[in-house]
Amino acid sequence: MTAEDTYKTITEPSEGIYTEKRSKFIAIALPVRTIDEIKVHLETYQKKYYDARHVCYAYMLGAARKDFRANDNGEPSGTAGKPILGQINSNELTDILIIVVRYFGGIKLGTSGLIVAYKAAAAEAIAAATIIEKTVDDDVTVMFEYPFMNDIMRIVKEEEPEILNQSYDMDCSMTLRIRRSMMPRLRARLEKVETARILDDEES
Picture 1 (cartoon, rainbow, N blue to C red):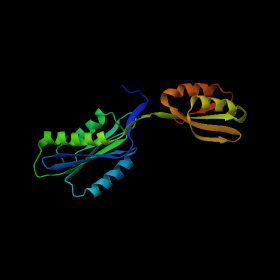
Picture 2 (spheres, rainbow, N blue to C red; picture 1 turned 180 degrees about the vertical axis):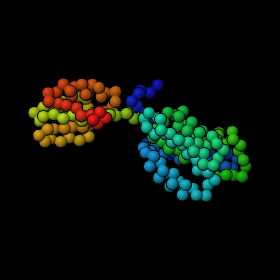
Picture 3 (cartoon, rainbow, N blue to C red; picture 1 turned 90 degrees about the vertical axis):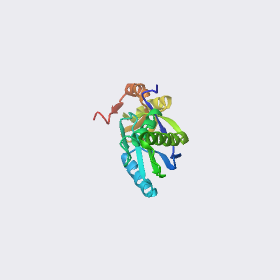
Picture 4 (cartoon, rainbow, N blue to C red; picture 1 turned 120 degrees about the vertical axis):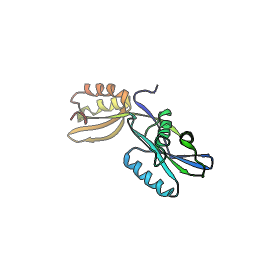
């Protein structure tokens, strides 16, 4: 069981090829973060493989893995997008788009043959990919008065959040990013510093 604040994705595009009865399935796995990115990739690959019979795909977005879609692109319903999505799920991946391009070889594969082929092609692309585990991070902005800078910096040094931005005017502010499971402790320590107040983007 993976922790609540980690997710798995791929680092760079990878490819896999599967052939069955002269039909050729080319699978491309791509790291993505947004629907717009997905649209651009789909357009690119549909143009690149304009002569292919089908360009099917599935994607999964977000650490919560709730934003996903499977597309059969003209193959019998459930024979292409679903098996591709199934491979994304069984590998617990997200922020990923897998496109499978099919060149028809003249021999029909039947629905079960198609399911096996799309699943195998997607699995090949995933097998060729570098899978990494990322943490789900949250941001926090703290405002404080200049004399208490050292207190804040000591906490930053010990808790090791990433510093996203900082400004030192009359009132100083610092935006920090840290792994979700470590946020409560970081916030509790920052709140103890005299004059410090935490701004919540979500709550404001």
